[in-house]
Length: 138
Image (cartoon, rainbow, N blue to C red; front, side, top):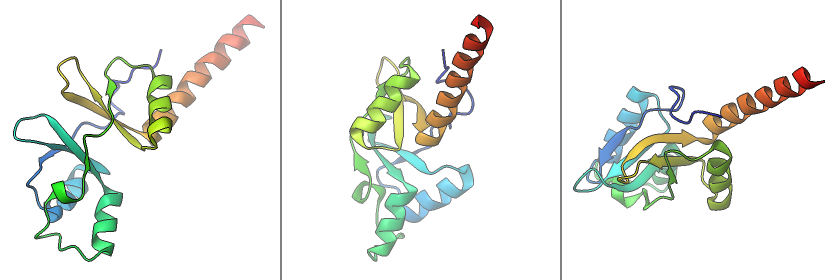
């Protein structure tokens, strides 16, 4: 079984809803991530903002020093349970047309963020395990 808590899954980078887009871009660059989880007044998941969201905002002429992340984020993003199988995660990504999926624990806190790239690597490993099993049984 694929472990969705493996280190290759990017750690969750969080910023508050009132962070300005220039801060989001700086954080993404410093942390080498393509998305940031946006939190509300508490640590609750309020949304997610991606590098694509930033690019579209800049294309539309939004001032990154005056625009807060809550103006461009995807609010209330779809999530999956922390213990979900990789195939369930990929199915959710496909059904919801998302490239990044927050994994939440029983309390609803985001514990990991799975990207489509991560999922493809993990699926490849899963398929390699299946191929190895087939070879041993031939």
